Length: 193
Length: 425
Image 1: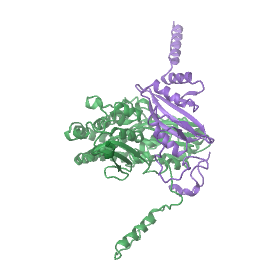
Image 2: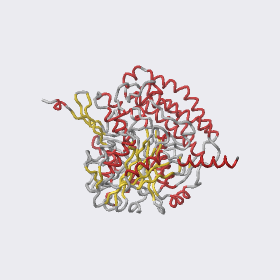
Image 3: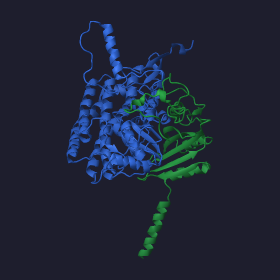
Image 4: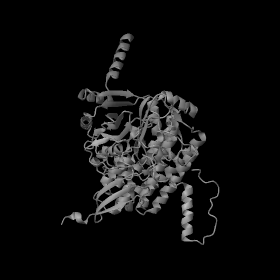
């Protein structure tokens, strides 16, 4: 009898494990709609699942529209512009399905080559994204096509054109512009790649 | 003739007696009515992200803490979470409880500060003094627990720096007892005073649609009816065990959320009580054990050089709302390749800029204060001094001021040489 019970328990446990979580369902929905996208559900040490999506720039706006249809109250929380060496990247973090805990934490990464640094603008889907795009335009020099507002946000208006402070290559801040940046010791060069 | 002829554009800030910190709004006015608001940031720009490209993981912890005095724990904590996720480090349970306690102490002090500022902005300085007097108790408690009134340096990657022993525990319990007597007074004033209701009700309404569009977070988002709290939706640390849930305006006022200044303030009043409860539960449930994984910072630097490989996201509910940090690192380097924080004031500022359209210009100061803006957090980004310009040091400024004084009054007596060495930079 006990053996039968054990088997039943094991089967039950397996069934429970197989039940997909909200994050896995979102990952599946994205992977089905965009076969080219790299979709991965990663779980960190304390058991928090995050969906990491890498998408090409042609499908980027479509993906954002899909996210908006999945959850009409999707929350766009951050846009991160960064220099990947030979590419520029724009990574967005979104929170969806937050009507009960845990919400789905979704990260969308899109890249563009440095010789053609253009990405589609998504401010029609998430209006707040425009402000992060403005930051991306001035900080690393990504050009968001058809963005309704391309003025600078943080940098002063007399800041020289063509210099992007967070670029790690020669378009970054040159040595002669830096006055030791408040560091007690003089440091030469920037971050190592 | 169209009405546009009568519209006036006025700059509001960067330095303005009604604003606590430098930020610039360009208001388009039709008489007294606000037609449009344009936000310009960057008046408090220190280039923290750029500086961070030249610091290692442990140094950035201190840098993140100094982005802002009021939410110094939140920045440090969220950055630490992001690094821990990228490195795959799990924190001892006792450390998680201590993080909750310090985080909630910080929330009490931040909310009391903001409630006082709100009262001050409508000229109700009696209430300012009442709340800021009450705030002294939590500041003293923080000093006793962490050693500092701001910049507590309590968190480290892989745990916390200081333990909460029996003596500190008694101090915190003392504080809880004090607040149980004081909070009913504060609650009574903010929820039932006719002056406050007259000025705060139906002022700067951020509708739920605008709040969603502009990504409003924290008390600003919840005041508009967005039921989200990063501690709850992230299932952060031990918060689920302590019974966290988002505080909504209807829990406090009994009415549906309207998204005005009053609702945002009511959420803060509710969170004062919630924080007190969380601290009590955390003190009761705190297990014994280790408080950090790595005993010394040099060990930590060496370990992180090997452990961090990839990206990590940290999410935490700061007093002002959801705070997000992103860290990307590479194995073999002790520096992160990219670190970006996003502060709650950033989206809230754009939400309130939409919200005040149609309001009276006299309400603008209250509207901006109602999101509890923290511009030193928001303006953290880029660098620099133009190569052609010279940076004035403290010494140069002193020389210039002595010169000016002598110009105005050549007869002046007294020795202007500074005593001691002053700042070395």
